[in-house]
Image (cartoon, rainbow, N blue to C red; front, side, top):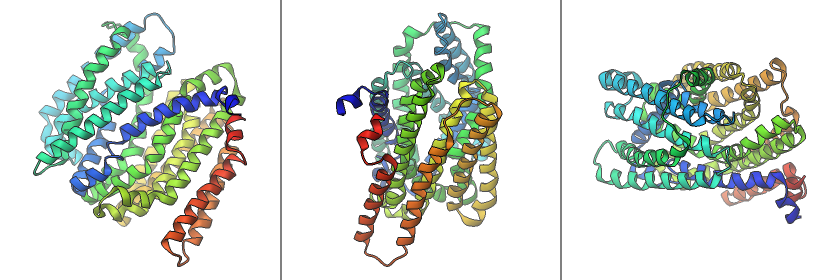
Length: 474
C-alpha cells in the first residue's frame, strides 16, 4: 500500500507541501518560534508597534508597487520567449515607483507617522521593507512553477533564522524602543538576501523597458490591486484598528493571539503552494475528478489541524509567551475559525483568478474588507480587541461565500462542489459544540487534556475514515 501511495499524484503534493511547510514554519518563526524569546524581551507595547508596522508593510507592498510585481509569475505561465525582457521591464517599473514613494516618505515623515499611528523613527524603513519583500516574491514566483520547493524552503529558513538571531542580539543592546531591534534585523538580513535574489535570478533577467510589457503588467496587476489591499486589510487591519482605538498594548496582545492562530495558515499555505501547479494543470486538462479529490483531502487535513489548534491553542500560547500576554488566550479559537473560512475561500478564489477575471476577485475581497472595517469601527470601541477576532471571522466567511457564489453563479465556471467541504466543517463544528458543553463540567485539568486528545483522534477518524492510508490513496 505504501508503494502504491508513493505513486499517486497526492504523494507528490505532500512531498512539496513538506518543503513549503518547513519554509512557512521558518518564515513564521519570526513571530511563532521566536515568541518565547520576543514576548520576554519585548513589552506588549513594543510587540504592538512591530505588529502595526508589519500590517502597514503588507498594505504598502500592494499600494506602492501598484501590485505590479505579481505579474511576473503569471507571465511565466505564458511560456513566451521574451520573458527576460518582461522581467527587466517589471524590475525597472517597480523600482521607479518605490523611489518616488521613498522620497515622499522622507519629505512628509512626521505627517506620515501621525496618520499611521507609528513612531516617526520607523517610517524610513517602510519602503526598504517593501523592496525586500518584492525581491523575495520574484524569487518564489519563478521557482514555484518549476517545483523547486526545496530551494525556496532552504532560502526561507536561512533568512528567517538570520533575522531572528540578529534581532535578538540587537534588542539586547537597546535600552529603549526595543521594537527597532527586529526592524534593524529585518533590514540587514533582508538587504543581504536582496543581492542574493538578484544574483540568483540574473539568468532570467535582461534590463529592458518595453511599453507592451508595461501594458500587460498594468492590465493584470491593477485589477488585482484592490484584491491585494483588501486581503491585507482582512489579515492586518484589525491590528491597526486595535492600535488606533485601544493603543499599542492592546494591539500587542491581539497580535500575539493572531500569531498562535496563524499556525493554521502555515499549514494551509504550504498545501496550497504545493498544489498551485497541479491546480492549473487539472483545470487546463479538465481533470475535475482529481481536482476535487485533491481539494477535499487538503481541506480535511486543514480541518484536523484547526481542531487541534482550537482545543490546544491556549496551552500552546501559555507555553510560548510570558504571563503579560495571557489575557489574549481566549481569542485564539475565534481567530482559527476565521482562518478556516479563509481556506475555503482559496478554492474558489483561484477559480476566478484562473479565468483572469481579476476585477471580480477584487470586488469579492473588497466587499469582505469593507465589512471588516465597518464591523471593527462599530465593535472594537465597545468590546475591546476580542471583537476584532469575531469581525475578522465574519469577514472571512463573507469572502468565502462571495467567492463561491461568483465562481458558481456569476461566472459559471467549474468549481469544487461545496457540500463535501461543508460536511467536513460541520463534523468538526459538532465535535467542538460537544466538547465545549463538556468543558462546563468541574473536571480536573489533566482529564480535560485527555478529552481534548480524544476529540482530535475522533475528528481525524471521522474525516479520514477507518484507514489513513486509504484516505491518501483513494
